Length: 584
DNA sequence: GCCGTTTTCGGCCCGACTGTTTTCAGTCG
Image (cartoon, rainbow, N blue to C red; front, top):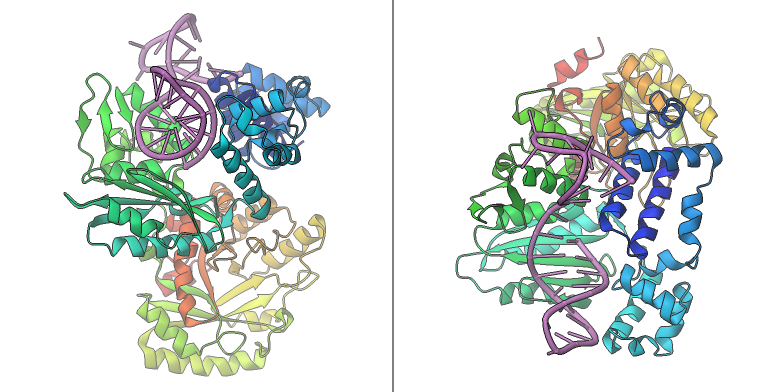
């Protein structure tokens, strides 16, 4: 039994309680409990982990876990089953929880469909829609029936969440269209896209009108070109867009002076807000998308931006990427009081001085060393490292000892011509046995060695861990390239004991890559947070195969920020000489 | 079900939109 499985069970309980119309605060307690277990070390055997806590009876030390949940988790871990859960299921069909996945069907409607129409799963629901039975129920009508039918079709046709590399550009495109309108004073992408969550269920846009401007033209522009109009009221509209197919986009229009509170509200996350609002109440304040107001008389505080928003709550500013209730609220409060370490000083674009992980025509890149150097310089960087592939990666051409010598001459010439420091490097392949694709005598002559896996992703966990541990122990390796090898939406992370390997990197000084290829985002924010706890260094890498991909920097930085990456642990957030000194 | 710098009891975030309603419940974020 892993913490993740415990969390899933607690969520299942929460959903069942919700369906049964239980007290919503009890439902939330189970959700909070689930989050607490998700935040534990994923390895149940880890020190301070799940099994140790069960053994020592210290589950209730976890915030959000009280006596009730602790007892259930103990039973679950010891026996693998939970009587309480079985009881909750006794009078419900197995497909009950699928019903609330249909848009427009919540717990109340789902329960009535189960009780009054004997609907047991999605197929049943589809049938009663077809037979026109739903409209006969009190409180339902023709429109609800139609809506439910469409909701089922949508559920079947699309996976719910899309990768950020699809959603973020779509959101920015939509925003640009709105910002071009004359009545618009300000606008921003909010929601999980702004928080840099790697998958998103929808897009959220916030727009502030100029003084006296009309809302209708903005709504019109937003809805124009939509694949489907979901809803439209006086201040908000929801549509489905064509690309990514059927993705929902929500627009919220606010009047002058409400932008900061609205942006904060629609950025989320839900968990962050729930805790924030409870804290606000203790201060005698209430939060909404319109204002921060005093409970006693409803008077409003003036909030110009999100820094002021947090200041009104006696907190230090929390970056959007951190707003997940992963401990950031407590750290922010402590920081404002001048106590403790405070929030991480998360990396920003201006901190990054060097462009790492760059491919050129010497292997599978589209452009020359000079092209890449000019692109790096244009992006405001002061150095870059050329790191082409070796033979095992399967590219042609590729780097050999001899070609590295030839490349050195070109690098020296480019450095002179372009006026930017260019380091010599390689992305060396990790071979089956954990040895590297170039001999140590060659590697030691280079400034930067990135070791990456490109083959045999399918080895079992033990063998893969051993293979990587050997490679990462090579004294010439400075960076571990795209550690998990995952591709969002198409390839799962390689199976390995990541915690062990991150601890190894912390010990040897090898930086783990935060690879900014939009489909990779590897390491993930989740693992980067773990890298932080063990003290591993991080490389903000573009893995650029063309000069335009210098912009992968933004993807890497967003992911790194979400992963609580402090700037002092980022190896390329320093000038080239300082970077090289890190391994001396 | 959880929690405590007012509390071991009594709280627990807030508002828009929709549909089917004659005044509001359900859903969503």
